[in-house]
Image 1 (tube, rainbow, N blue to C red):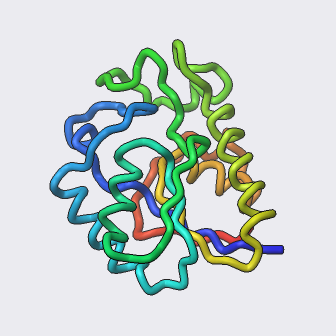
Image 2 (cartoon, rainbow, N blue to C red):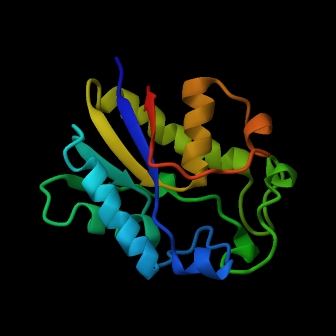
Length: 175
């Protein structure tokens, strides 16, 4: 059993541009983000994708809807794919990106990175059993990228969490 997973980040949000940690809040794409979403659609529209998965957060959903407007591809929202919940720090300019301090210690009123990765891992396990032989696209957040690296590549969260995130036009994994 195997599933090809293409992972793409959601496009740039207004909060990204303003230096705000959106976390578990919806967020909206900026003008640049809407253009990035169109480019994502051009890149992936004829890429053998059978279904698109996103979190239910606005910035991920909006990315998928713009990218695949007019396409017959099914877009499925799943709350397990949400970004790490920064709790009281969602929507603030507070320094939430020192992730190493929050591997196992939840953000105030939120969750830890390990809990976020475990949540996404449940989605990935279900994907493996229900989408055998398919190539799927997941448009999502950092928590999903971390979970894919842990599950597929056997990386340790403690090693990943301190690495800077560098955007690229998608990553490919096999579950």
